[in-house]
Every structure is written in structure tokens, then in C-alpha cells.
Image 1 (cartoon, rainbow, N blue to C red):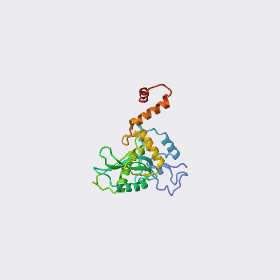
Image 2: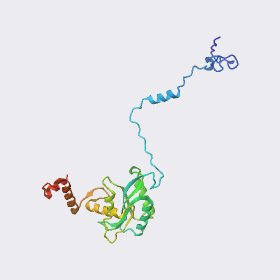
Image 3: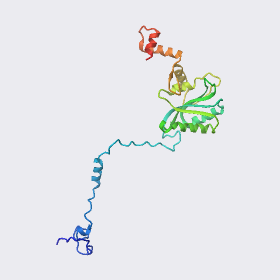
Image 4: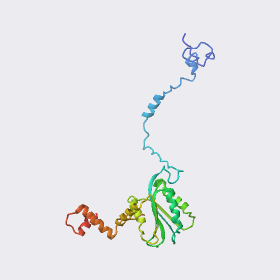
Length: 258
């Protein structure tokens, strides 16, 4: 006989004769007194619905890059960056023991780099000028602050000591050879001294030659040609691109300067 549907759950469903397929209930009405439940979607259909769901209006939020926090300077998780570094003191020369301490810093953090002593053109104060390649966070994560912090630690700098440290990422036009040549510009002076790591004497000779031909400002990345280097560059331009045209110097210069 077909099962009789009740208006309320049957008290004898679990003991009395049950309809096969209704799991011990005499009818679906007894099993679901509050109405039929919503059918459950299968895992395959749920995945298909997620794939075909419409994209919300507006641009998707870009994934934020997580900085590698907690890693020390020089860690292999960072990329290599070149930095120009100036270390000096306000109103006086730097102490000579700073040169020994900077050599330890080079060994500890730099893949390769160079520091040299020089005197400024204006105040004639002895300071350190360097160009170093270091594994550090990128510019947007302010890796130069980590470089500055390690320098202060190794040089044992205390607050109010009058030290000035300037650390900058290389500008677009700056190259290691020209920057090293800039650091070596006081080569023949009595106060000159140099400390390096991963830079050979051949590298330094080439850097000095390149700097003599084409000087560069370490702070702004601008090219600076003095008179001798300018004429050398102009004649090199003539020999490479204009020879054998019969041009005078003024004509060559006019073609050389855009």
C-alpha cells in the first residue's frame, strides 16, 4: 500500500513499517515536516558555477607585493643594487680609524665595491666616497636606509656626533665604471687611500680612464665633459661617423651637439 502522508511527523515511523528509500520514515512528509529541503549542488557543478560567475564591475585590486621583512642586509633573498655612498663629518675631517672600520663593512655586506678618501672642492674636508653593489631591498622598500643603518653601526656613530651619511641608488645614467672613476679622482694626492672588494687594479685603471673621458655627477647622474675630454669626444665622433667629409671643427661640433 502507498504510504499515507501525515500533517505532522508520525511517532511510529522508526518502529512501524517504513517505505523503502525513506530511511526509516513512513513518508517524506514525516521526514521533512517543514517542507522539502533545497537540493545540494555537487562539487563539480559548484566549480563550474565559480568559473562562469561574472567578474565584478571595476578594475581588480592588484595584489600587494609583500616586502621581505626581517631579512638582514646582504641576504640572498634580495636583488643586487648599486649604491653611491658619501660619508663625512660636519666642519672637520673624518678620523682615520673610520677607514679601517669601512673595510670591515665592505667584507660584511658588499658583493663588490670601493671606497676612497677625497677632499671636497668647497670646504676641502676629508671624507669617504664609495660605490658598492649590495643585496638589498628595492628603492620602494627603502633599502638605502638599511645600508645607512649598518654603516652607522660599523662606524660606531652616536647621535649628535656630527656625522653625515648619504646613500643613494644609482641613477639611470650612472654606471659602476664611471662611479668608481669618480671615487678615484684624487688618485695622486697625499691624502688619497682606497679600500675595495671584488675590484681589480685593471678595473680601477679602466674606471679612471673612463672618468677622464666622461665625468659624471654621482648625485644627479648628469654627464659632465671638460674641455679636453669634450674635444676628444668630438674628434672621436668625427672619426666614427663623419670621416672623410671635409668639415671644420665648428661644423663637427654643430653636428655633435643635438
